[in-house]
Amino acid sequence: MQIRRHSLPLIALSVALASCSASVEPTTEAGSQCVDIPNGQYFQWVNGRLVGKATIEDTRERPPETARRIGITLAGMGYPWVVLNWDGQTASIGGIAPNELTRSDAFIAAKAAFEADSVSGPLVQRVVNDMTIRDPGSAVATRLNQDLASQGFDWLRVTMVDNIALLVGQARNAEIKQSGYRKARTLIEADLDAGQIVNVVVDVISTPGDALPPGSALRSMPVAPTLVDCENAFFDTMAGRKIEFMSGQAIIENSSARILDAASGIAQRCGAFEVEIGQHLGVGEDESGALDLSQRQASAIRDYLSAYGADRDSLIARGYGVSQPLDRSGTVAAVKRNTRTEFTVRVRDLD
Image (cartoon, rainbow, N blue to C red):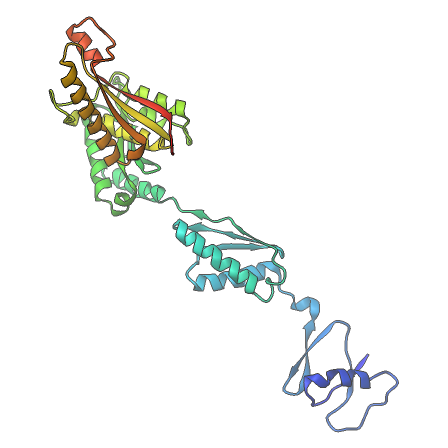
């Protein structure tokens, strides 16, 4: 096959092709000649001349090259962490986004880039969002644990579960436990990032020979707790423990703070359910006064839990006064046993 090369506009190319064949003698017209064209040759009209570029197959950009090129564009738009995979049909948008809003924006930008691109645009069939969101709690915990270790508390670790900071470790004695607990709380309260995500700090520090720490049941909860899991966690947390109030008042004693911190963490994990805070008082007290006091105490517990991250709308405060005693003997031991806080978990009515 032959083609006559002319200093003509590109629109005259078809005329030139028609004028050349193996049976036509080359013309002596200045600036024109017939030349052989290899099969598949690609030409471009440049400065009045046809210039051979490459074969059509050689000009096709490979999918990984397309992905790299689009990735450079996205990096320039502020998404250098985006990872692209393109197989010629499906584009997968991966990477770890700092938050949900950025994840959404990056996906929109990447999808638009693939669909508008001259190579991938005509071919793309699906754009899949495989991006994950960076867990801010993990980064905060890593930094806090490094700080604890550098200050001699390498036996103590901060573990983040949702917005709950668990202080986990085994101290040699109660004094060392108290020192580690205070140091960890101080570091958490001073950390700006932790301040944005931590609702409550829970004691899961054990000491030899002592009862399990208040946060043990919370730490053992599954990722997606059921109603039964929540009931068991509250029961185990309160077993052998009481929420103490100042005598005859609805003011919580400081000694009960760690129990309530654990209860707040459980309530947060169980936010899909309704949690009733039932406050009971001992036998022998004035019934009307006991009912009022128990209601105010239940409300104080609800206030504490909601202040440390629990959903207030999922918490029901109910005072029972002396109406439901466990022991009717009237002894000092009976009064102590009857004075209690019970957490009851139910299916939440969202209507």
